[in-house]
Length: 388
Image (cartoon, rainbow, N blue to C red; front, side, top):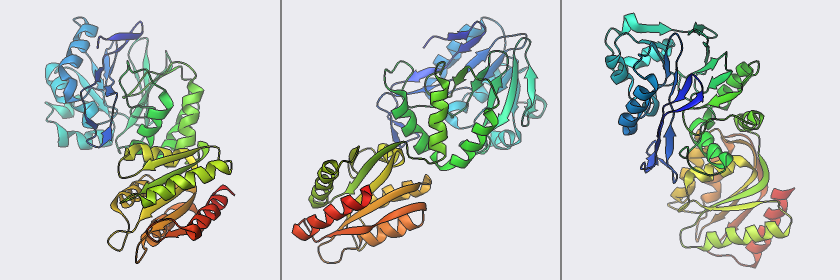
């Protein structure tokens, strides 16, 4: 991808990756991912982050074209995860006069990844609120620990009022992908940053006093319009509020009987006026999308078969991910299935009770192998209970 100007002296020098199969070796990215990197040219030239090794050659070409024979004076290291930092050592060796800008934690971790010539003489350690004047542009640094690594920081360019937001406001998909921002940004947020809502809230409070006219993340599109919309989404997500009134039915079914119950409950909920009902098959559907929907809606039904005196593994995996991502402030109902000793309900309840502010429906449906009239009547009760 050719470098493009964000403004007369600020360049996008990142690259799209459409060949990647799994982002972070776990997240399906049907429309790929972008690795974003930026260059500000002024009396002093500064690069903001490098990119993943998969696109090194394209990034180097973009950088050299944008520099047009000049040399970089500084590299700002927002985040040391390899998809953003892989080329730091290459850059440092190519431009031995270049200084590296980071915080204490940046330089504590950096030697674990790279061998940088003369690092002690080249590093510039910045703290909260520190500024760096480039000429007509001035950078100001704000620490963002655990959004989503300890060394993360964001950079605010004061003249053009641009926020370089690290992984914040990121999104799956390449820059030339035509798709709704919210869906893939939500899936990205909850699966990658979601555990650290408190830390995101702290960062949003720091940034509230800044006038921001453009947000430049390390993944996904540059945001230039309706910034209040994106910031409000992050406020909702990071405070664990429900985004929509709806019910996610997440089921883990071995032979199809539990799935039948989940689908029948969905019909009952719709008949009773539920605004939105979403079904996900935990054995087959994208687990990251299931996590996204669990946080998106204010209510959830878990339906699972008993397995090895516990719960069918796809449900156990789902609950493990929910706990890891700090799932909270939701109402949840349960359906269990078991031919001789149903235990799935106990497992699911125990996991839910370990989470914060989860309201568990009093009605629990137990199915013995397949639905019958008594268990169908309990589905009706559960629907009433979850919609109260």
